[in-house]
Length: 220
Image 1 (cartoon, rainbow, N blue to C red):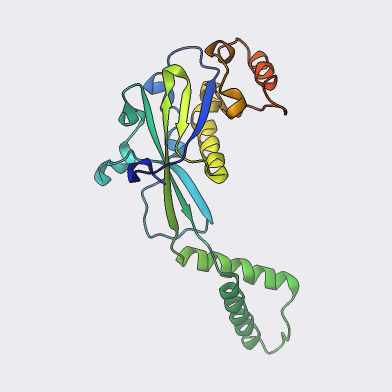
Image 2 (cartoon, one colour):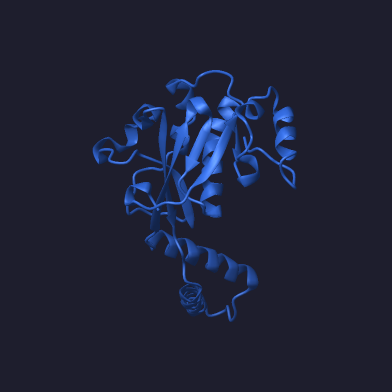
């Protein structure tokens, strides 16, 4: 749920690997490729689509032209993610495929049955056609990235949403800027800033592992 609705859950991340202040130009390097386009009732065959969305309250007229400068707020950046999910009822798919099979058999006096390969092709065609006509369910969640303190507050605790956020962050900022994300779980809350700022990724990970019963992996 969006924080603007007055209710939220919270996950916390630490960003490691930053060696200098991040400029707007740095942050915009790969942003456009991870934006989700303005929603339209258009054909789509994806069961799930997600990406960075325009900042809250951004004008629809200028939707496609926003960048990280528009997300700047006080000592950080507000990031908004939109998720679109399309679900296709399996019973509906089966009924449509059955109709398609009957049409194929009726159009040929020689063909008496539908083979496995042909049925698979009909199934995929029916799935694509129906998915393109289905309406998605749309949801949002947000994060606040305090860039100078290398802290991110993600306003959801959903495992699926965390995975989406981590993937978007990795593509937009992690790879181009050599940044890594660490999900801060309770055992890590007591670490000092000195632990997070140790030089070298291996050294930082070794310190984090010492606080946990299992190994730590940083996404980047």
